[in-house]
Structures are given as structure tokens and as C-alpha cells.
Length: 220
Image 1 (cartoon, rainbow, N blue to C red):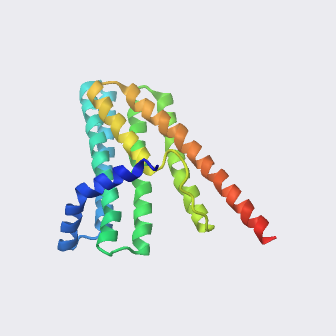
Image 2: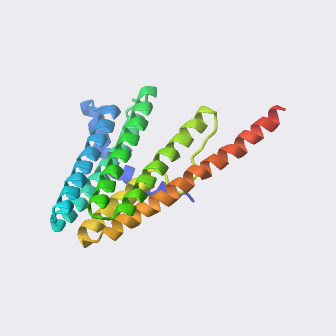
Image 3: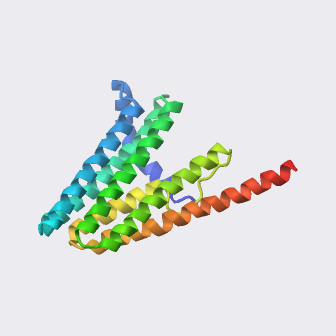
């Protein structure tokens, strides 16, 4: 069974009244998508401020900011769910909306991981900063391979570390880091994303290879 299904159903049950209210007052999915990006920009600002605090020896304040950054990522992630739900329930789906959503998702994820990368580097955890960069690369490639596959007419949603999982991992480890004053939580989350996101990207490449080979064989 897809573990996402019961979780999504519960979240939809909680947010549906809010979605219906948005429909009544004329809020569009593109507005919600943009608010989600702004939320992630706020989270990144918190991480960058935390990095400055780390550099200046204000570690307690830095950890507090990291924790709040995680909270903001989680809240922004809810907007990422609401835009799609709003589009479906309000019959406001559009091709441009799908493009806008995908584009801002990439910006949102990259800027928050960039903020975490700077935190780790300024804290003296240089190699964990490198790992976070690898997490950024993996995150982009997971999305790129799916987009390229769909352009070739292949459904490509396989893998362990898709965007919802990456958002949850980044948010949760940042919150725990803020609560425990321990950067190993943040580092561990980045290692997990770096390994599984890049594994997922190559998993998708292999999936596409099999599908394309089958198609080529059928056309001969």
C-alpha cells in the first residue's frame, strides 16, 4: 500500500474547510503557490541569520533560528499541498499553473537547502556543507529526470526520496536541531537526502531505460 495515501487523506480532511473558504473569497492556486515560495524565502533568511550567529559565536540564538526555520519549511509545505487541492476543488487547474507550481517548487527547495548549506559551513562543518550541496544536486535531478521522462511520454514517479519526503526530512531535522542544539541532526538529514535523492534520480533513469528499450523493440 502507498504510505502516502492515508496521510494525504488526513491532511485533506483537515485543510478542506480552509480550501473551501479560499474558493469563496477568490484566492487562486497560483497565489497559494507564491505564498509557499515566500515562506521558504523566510526560512532561508532564518538559516542565513543563524549562520551569521554561528560565525559570531552566538550559538544558542543560531540553534533557535534553525528550529524556527524548520517550522516555517513545514508550514510552507502545507501551502504546496493546498495549491493542488485548491485547483482541483475549485476547478481552477491550468497548464500554466502546473508550470508555475513546478518552477517555484524548485526555487523553494534549492534556496532552503542553500541556507542549510551556509549554516553548516559557517559552523565549521565544511564537509557537511558539501553533502548539502550534493543533496541540492540530487533534488534537482530527481525532478529533472521525471520532467524529461514525461516529455518522452513515460510515467516516472518511482523512487524513495521525492519532494514531499525531502521537505519533511529537511523540516523535521531542522526542528530537532533547534530543540537539541545538535548539528548532527541537521547533518544526518542532509546525508539522507543526498544519498536517497541521487539514488532516486538514477533509479528513475534506469526505469526510463527499460521503458524506452521496450518501446524501441516494439517499434522494430
